[in-house]
Length: 407
Image (cartoon, rainbow, N blue to C red; front, top):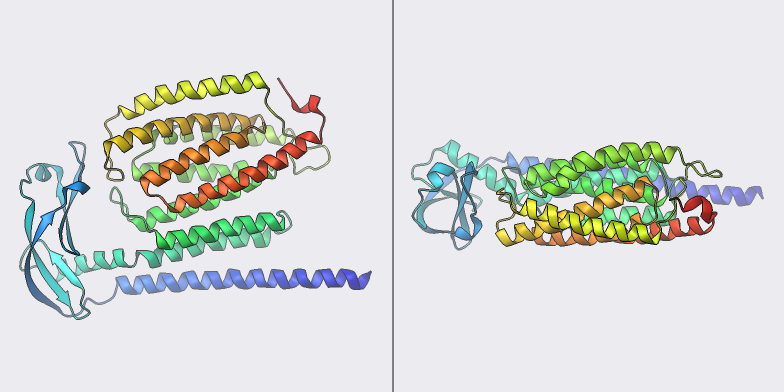
């Protein structure tokens, strides 16, 4: 018997040691990539030579500004050579030419720098070179940020190993590894004056927190609401940075944050009699489901119409038809989200069905908006929602129906 116990303890120690090694390696790798990125950004420009002037053509397809805009970026191209000039709106509306003369410089490493005026100073050329370098090293910084978030995920698995099953650990880490890969392969462009590196970091943090929250909900743990508060704060910041999805932002601020606090209190009052960490869950009745569906339809039509009528411009989405479509999808997602929040508050199993719908709507918005890294989060939603629905259903079937079906 003693030999059997020792045999089981030894593999566990080896697994834990392996997890610690992986955690340390990830930390070291992240630091290395940050160092490489900073070294490239601060690299000496070296000797620069003037090459000559070139004619560049304005790309109007990237422009969609109005009187509410402050700074307007205009892109000029000549083959693979690009020049971006930022104009105040007052100067932008007076632009009447589609061509501009660019002045080409090149350093010893063969890096081309295009300026919009002749006789540019060394300081001006160096500033432009630094911006080019930042854009070229975006993948390095995205990987460094992704590894930091991955460190958090591994740390959760390592220090809370007794809480999660092998499947749950594997699922959690798999989603985060995929997010790391996508963050490197599909970098985000800058938007509204915010560098794409910071936008990607917000996406990765949002993915990590959402996945952890989803996992805790499937385990009927009331502590999911503490993580959910961080989720809401992160998503509000994303909406502000990108200047879009205002229905979701308002819903998050006025509904989700308060409901998370109230839900934590409510779940704490309904602990399972046998397992203190579990919360008693239940199911909806048929007529309640019908009422919820009708409310969602009405909300989508009214709020979608209101949001689509707002004259809000953003350089994140430059297509009016897409803006209107996203407004209605966003309204529907916010309505389903509210229903989902109430289902979670009252501990109803149907919240998993709402998660399915939310994930599908969110995936459509992410594809339209080019937010491919967030599709990994939706993959996590779909897989864990199935897992959570099965777990909650088994729990409900194993307990007395009279105790679970309330009003």
